Length: 58
Image (cartoon, rainbow, N blue to C red):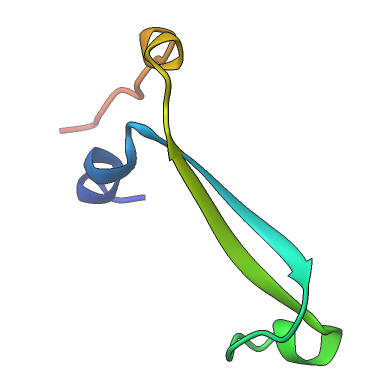
């Protein structure tokens, strides 16, 4: 993940899941009858307090 992407997503919990159903176009989805779904939510205040951000190599 790039530094810009991390800055955008650093306060979110992001889950990529697979569920049954027709996918739109991703190659792995079509023959298996599944699709990918992204679920996101903002982190709680308690979760934010416990985050250890990675060191950057700037």
